[in-house]
Length: 97
Image (cartoon, rainbow, N blue to C red; front, side, top):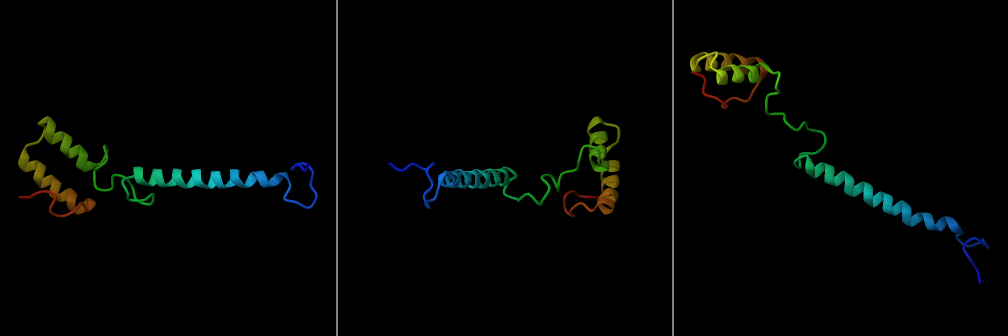
């Protein structure tokens, strides 16, 4: 009886590593695809929240001041129009008066 440990010109015991290598490739591909899909089908090269202001941005601070009642609606829209010009938010996302 010939075993894999007895190498007589055959493939030898290293042939058992090929299924392990293919399993690692499949698991890696599945992991990469799942991470990409979790990011909202936008791919790993784009930031998640590119259209929302961050918590420390001037636009977010302005929104918090308006929500807390520190400034009135007219002042909010006036300042938001200035910040839109400076920080390049999309036009049409607010009606500046």
